[in-house]
Length: 455
Ligand SMILES: C[S@@+](CC[C@H](N)C(=O)[O-])C[C@H]1O[C@@H](n2cnc3c(N)ncnc32)[C@H](O)[C@@H]1O
Image (cartoon, rainbow, N blue to C red; front, side, top):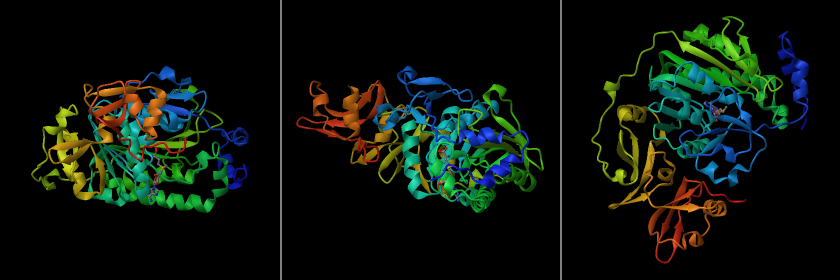
């Protein structure tokens, strides 16, 4: 392992006379990891329980922590009360608010979504009646994306596992596309020196080609007037400003600027050909890792997907059952392989449209498995922000909540109560999952994907 930054990278940055490359090199001398978290505004949480250093100025619910806790041991991490996210990435919160995309319901696509940092942010900052499609191409990464969005607790989300080209089947469908592209990763050098040895100019070129492929194959899904947020964690202009120039030249996009506070330390750049605005985050200037973001708006005329094409089949799912567990106002039920889900009524046709052209991994909130007349409640239901507050529940202390997450026997926790049947277990008033209490034993329904194994 070496912490010497690649000369090719330094030389490319030195080209900019206002760039303080000595300070840039110096900040990379020590491997340093800043800890920051973003709270979930839909969950009940006392932020004073966390060791907060200060607010992140460009994100309403973002905070720097004084030290890094063991998140795995915090039950509130598992119940989706916050997401541990790198501070620079949280700039998208400011962008969405400045563009006023938080004020009216929109359809949004997060194209390269796993593990779900930007998706959970979008889901919190966009208007609560927006629809979010979170897509991830790599099958093995879809599970972590799903887990993070399920614990975030909102029903207005569809998770898909598709190649970006699949989105060309939905022309003009989205008002907003976020493309947080796979990149050469130089922005991560400051917190992870081992990444330095993997960097090469050849890889920058490869990444650039991949970024162009991702964008060119999916951009037709953005409607005329819709916004594209393009971001990377690379310092290379080939993957950043040059891509933005190419989008403007070849895809009828225009650059969008917005106001930022000078004291935040964000560097505003202009692309070579079109003077398009980019926002760069450098760890020697601000407290965050390397990040680039540019905002583009589609000027070009774009065909739109015809909703008339969507086939509506008779929905045979029981519509009343979910009400026993969840506040179903403005939602409808559908079944998928015996599992009952609820989804926002206003997006019923959108869901059918998405289902007709994409491979979907999850949609809405999974309520439970139908077994005869019974419903076996899903873990997702316990974490949902719509779950009824009057379901029988058991409040756990910290060690009991950790034991629940280790899938240990819960008998002592429930001993003194008269609870029988399905019981929601809670920690600090936030739902964690289910247990089932019977006369002679208690079953712990913490799913294996969530289980704490080694701590
Ligand atoms: C920078 S990461 C995304 C991080 C995520 N947006 C977040 O905030 O948590 C880039 C993502 O692109 C995915 N990816 C890799 N190759 C891709 C390709 N050819 N097309 C689309 N996505 C790709 C990766 O699997 C990865 O999940």
